[in-house]
Length: 379
Image (tube, rainbow, N blue to C red; front, side, top):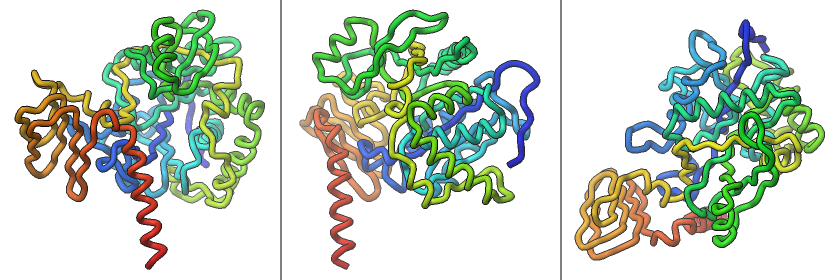
């Protein structure tokens, strides 16, 4: 594959956007055919477009064909949707196309092979989920600059961004910080989603941060650490990459992973594969106006409430109702005498759920899949 020119001076930063996942907790707005990164927010931009636009604000990103460059890992079925959002944001890019999802460790490892081949060991890679919302872009840029400085440390650190917790949230993993560094802290421990009492203790201690799933590290160090801590991921991802090189096409902007080899990659997250095992992890605390929009509650909270706590996107009307959210695209939805509801009206589905049960929407999606599978088996 054609080797791109390095920048003359200073560090090189290659952003990697991970774009995929059905976002099942946001059904019926997010589905397999229209995953969460492609949901349009209230300003008309998708989460993916916003992610690409943030990249255009970063320093140290190479310019390719006169535009800031980024990598994207996505499912091959979503290539054209991703390409449209990239073009809207005015970026250039290369797409690594997966035949199916195998979690973040294989995806990041394959992107690391691409970066190593084109920019060498010393390039930093910035991992950005495509379905997160960051409202303070200026602070985001400053935090990335701090991460690059830790990448340049001797020895370099693998950096994760810890979001400053605003509440004892049980929906996020947590990172406990250790000794202070020139920027941020050394990571002491990673913890899974806690119960409420534990989350309250985390919040009170001020040593714990939400695990955002955003990372920044030098590609050479990443590959070296992966060979130590997750050799099976490295072995299988190297086999995939070697096949991509062998069977490369004239279109270097779209690289398809061979299905049989890719299926052999372990289905494992980068947290389990590396971040929880390495002793060279740093945490940069960040207050970015961040949300992973992981449920209808977090989506609802993007809208300002009225005096009764009601929120609306689209057309609707509230009568004697409180703390209710309506989203309706094509018709008027009226809520009378209700409270604490989420009402989502789309062209072909209507969701009504109590706010205390929004996490159970995922169970509904699983049930719908079972029903479809059963119907197919009967035909």
